[in-house]
Length: 222
Image (cartoon, rainbow, N blue to C red; front, side, top):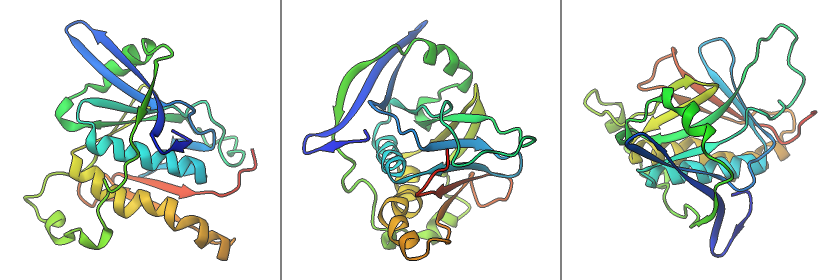
């Protein structure tokens, strides 16, 4: 998944059976090392990515938009942050799992699924391509309407952030939030080395009680 070719992206895939249920899990053949996700102890979850990790995240987001029956897993809790955290920060690294809401996957089952993944088998998926719409084509008024329900939702369990939503929610946030980390962030920070480029992904409807802050970091000290 960190390297693409004309034929697609390199992944690993496992099918895990728990009782009567079977789960299909996809994860990068080579997970990015400069990706770090954690709960900052406030009203937001925070994530740092470099260029390679941003590209991996975009592919994962695209897969989540079209893979209704898969758990898309980005292992990163063993990674180091961009810089040494404060001694009293209490930072706990998290993995990331993207999942379609129709699976009704209970996060409490994740430790059992994760323990049975093994090495998986090689699998190639087509790049997301045009799975994300043009940002200018998104009807933001419709999304803000009270009767609109396809929003992303977050849950944290077993040192993992679960991002749950429907295809439209993943496509919309992929277009407006994730894709710019790949297409705009490098040039922006090249022109403004002391600048800041991030994505703010809300939990459900707009509310300050939940948000994922994804910051692009071109250089890492650790």
